[in-house]
Amino acid sequence: MALCLTPWNFPVSIQARKLAPALAAGCTVVARASQNVPLSVIELFRCLQDAGIPAGVANLVQGPASETTEAMMRHSAVRVVSFTGSTKVGQSLVKQSAPRLQRLALELGGNAPFIVFDDADLTKAVDAAMVGKFRNNGQSCVATNRFYVHERVLDAFIDQFTDRIAQMRLGDPLRPDTDLGPLIDDASRNHLLEVIDEAVASGAQPLVDPLVLPEKGYYMSPMLLTDVPADTVFARDELFGPCAPVFTFREEDEVIQLANDTEMGLAAYVFTSHVARATRVTEALEYGIVGLNHALASVAFAPMGGFKLSGLGREGARIGMEEFLETKYVSSEI
Image (tube, rainbow, N blue to C red; front, side, top):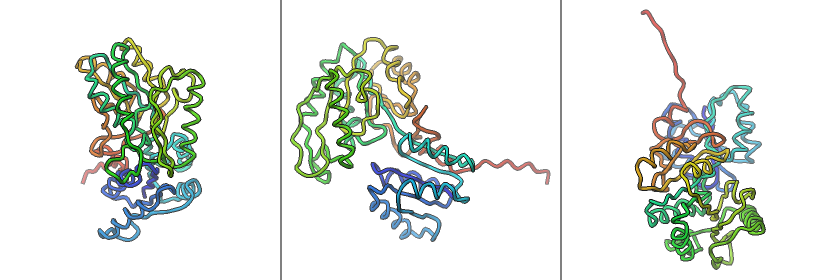
């Protein structure tokens, strides 16, 4: 049996990426969705039922995350666990899996760098920055978290980027003209505001004026800051929201070192028109996913997963199904 545990930020697509290969590999599945977004996953399982999946093959459990997960991890039928979420919870699952040596496929936190070299197409880079940072309101493990821009193009990049941010519209995410919706909850918003306040108090400079926020909902104005001290949370940790620091660099080796200076290694983005540089930098970056001149590198038909504390194993593509398979060797002289 496969245990599939999913977060709140992409509730249906992430659960589907786990269910499909597990079922295709012949596993029965028990799944738990985030308590923050239960209804969409319930509908996904209803669709499976309507499609004729036999009873007991795909099962959905609701309840408190830690209690339900611990109970299922102890069950003798669970042989493989596919989890997407925080590194902290992933580490807890590693400990829980130890007594029975359950196989783990873990897609954990990120801290994605976005590197812009001086030979990059800046318009294309800014277009990608808008997607990489603000898609799903920045609430994505592969979202851009740190911008590193070459000193020769820093001013031009910032001018274009701040202009685009200033034109964003906050509001109902179901409306086609909305650019940013609300964050998941008040606690997430308050944490981000505290992190920003700390950075500003330490000398960081905001680059855009706050936008007008809707009266109801956990909305937050997009933030872009420069001169962020390296020892602040804003510069070091994953920011799950529409805010990001901008740093400058001069040399290729320098920015590679800066980009790799993190315990995470999920996604990274590189913008350059120089083929040799693109090859050197993408190979040197310690990340499981690298987007070259675009910011939508995570797709269902390609393997997704990270290095270091960003996880174990891969999800998606043919390699993703291997997480739900065992290799058997039969030697026969019949």
